[in-house]
Structures are given as C-alpha cells and as structure tokens.
Image: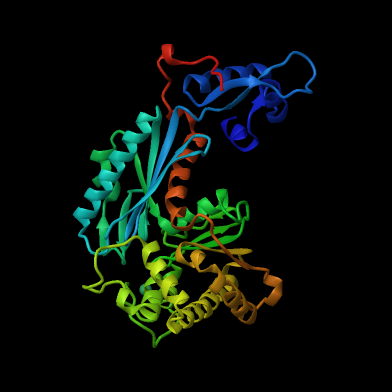
Length: 400
Ligand SMILES: [Zn+2]
C-alpha cells in the first residue's frame, strides 16, 4: 500500500480499496499501522467532484522518516538527504582530495560529513532509516566492503564497518557510484522510466550503471558495469588500474585536463589545493572562450571515443539511452552530436538500435541522490523496519 501511495500519490481510503483490490477493513487497519509508524498521514479533503460525503486523503508522510546518501569521489564528498516522499532536504558537496589522502583520513572526513548530515536531519525532525555510500570502485554490497577503487587507491576497505561509530544505530550500505547514479536516473532523471539504459559517470574514473529490463544489472559478483576499463587501445596510455588503453584514459576527466589544460592535470604536485570538479571545468571553459584550440581538439577527441565505447555498449546491451553524467553533461553541446554520429557508424544494428546519448540533469549529484533513494526504497519495501512512534506523538490528523 505504501508503494501504491508512492507511485499514485494521495488517495482516499475508498480509492485505495478499489484500486488495490484490498477490502476496506484491511485498508483501514493498514493505514492505522502505517500512521503509527509515521509513514502516512491523513490530510485535507478529497478533490471536489466526488459523489457523497467528502473524505480525507491518505498520503506518504514526509515529516518523520528520511534517508541519507553520500558519495566519496576523487575530489569531493557529496551528501543527499531525502524524506519518504522523495523530497530533497540536503544537497551539498564539499571539495575533498580523496586521491591524495590516505584511507584513514578519507574515512574520518566521511564520518564527519555523516555526523553533520544526521544532525541536520534530526533537527528537521526526521528519523533516518538508512545510509548508503557510493564509491567509485568494486564493492561487496553484502559486507559493505570496497574491494578495489583504483582512483581512490583503496583496496579491501570495510567502509560500512568503519562508519559504524558515526552512524550507529543506522545501518550503512555501500554500493558502486555508477549503479546508484543509474538508479537515480531511472527513477528521477531525464530518461526516467526507460527500462534499458546505461549511465556513464563522467569523472576521473568512468563507470557504467546498467539498467536492463528495468533492473540493475550487477553480474555474478556485482562487478558488472566497469566500462571505464574496457580495453579500447592496446597502444594507449596507462590507466589508474595499472592496465593500458582503458576507455577512461580516452574519455575520463583526467584525459580532458591532460589534453586541454595540462597545467591543471590531476596528479600534478604543483596543481595547488584540491578543487571541486566544477572549478576545473570552469577553467577549461574560460580557455575555450579565450580561443585556446587545445580545448576544442580535446573535446572532439573525447566525443569520438565516447562514440567508439558507446558502440561497444550498444552492441552488447542494446540500451535505448546512454545517459551522460558528470562532466560529460556540462560539455553536452560539444560531445553529443559527434558521439552520436560515431554510434551510427559503428553499431551493427545501425539505426534500428535506436539509442540516444542524452545529458544527465543530475550532474555530479546523481550517485548521492541514488544512494539516498535506495535507502528510501528499503522503507517502501519493508515498512516494519520503521518503529512505532510513542502513542502520545502519533498524530491522527495533521493539517497541511
Ligand atoms: Zn583501467
């Protein structure tokens, strides 16, 4: 019933009974229980036009239960807080040099961000039911351990366990950043509802989140979607993973910097204090506006390689949409047409494959948003995980 209210929106008891096929007594008793857990609220009057006595409508309660999503990436930590209705309460990002910090320092900073966000959500009156952390790497979702995150330099880091002190008693889950961003796109992005889509992170690392037939494709060990390490050029550059010619060495943010603004490239000891990725992008746009030919050349090269790698994905997965996230979205105007033209040339099904590159509107927030979203999803799937409120604070009717 909670899921029904989530997709359909507010409804009267009679409508819920009629549309779910549950009998009215069951609907009433379920509503009472969900109210007692602070998950639904009875509000207002039913819209005019309905015959008979005006009734009240039941809707998800956005005032009591929340979820937190975080993303740690090469140069930032993003935080996203949602209430049960999917409303955004926290949306922030701080610059943080995770590439240049050791694991302990990164986890300490992450724990600090968790504490701060939990305090903010508590101050807003929300009980946080779940925390999900997005990491650009291979994750054992069962144990909350990051097995390998090449661009962070992490191996076998038990992230969920290490954050437990900051988050207790709220459970922490860990998942791959591209998987979570793909879920955010599938539920709330430009291609929402497209059952076959691929999301590409446009960061230093390039990860893929694959939705196939409306489900996230994880593979046998949960490692599906490591598209950034597709070996596309045996004579190419060395990748963060230690191999040669991976796709992300052609299209990742580090590749753009290296080609367009080598003095701002990642990993240079003299590149100054860490900056959020937007600042690096602003610098590139400034040079482009000033007529620096390296920027146009770099973007053309990246667009070409986006199309080449994209064609591999289309031949393999037959998605309808490839959603470009991160910096790709910011430079959409310079990337999409050329990448689409490459796709047209290289996909074996030709125009019949009908796959479009589109730019994400969630930009660098997608993974943290998706992370919060999956924590909300768990409540919708199992409302009994939310404890009953003490009887005196249970509202029977709240005016909006
Ligand atoms: Zn690689």
